[in-house]
Length: 138
Image: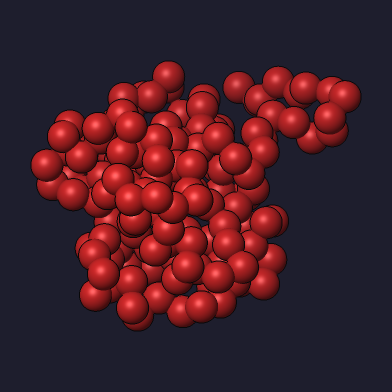
């Protein structure tokens, strides 16, 4: 999976299929609770239509009305002003998008002790059941 510049031209090449996507700050480390995220991951997400989902992030991140809460937070918190190198994305086509997203969120959480900064939806990996919160392994 190669990282692609986040622009209208690159979005045209994204398939309209099911999958998981990652969005990151270019050339920017992000300090986390446990260490530093050298990749600068901002969000890990899933969608039944990757192109549409990434397009809505792009619109929301640029201040346009679009239904993508992570893109709206990117714009609201002025992340573009903090990182002048821009953002990139990559994706993985899969029919098991929800399972893959959860696996990737768990992997990130185990490494950094928290989710990527803009993630909120998709569930919290610490929740295996709604009535029970498990502690992550040390």
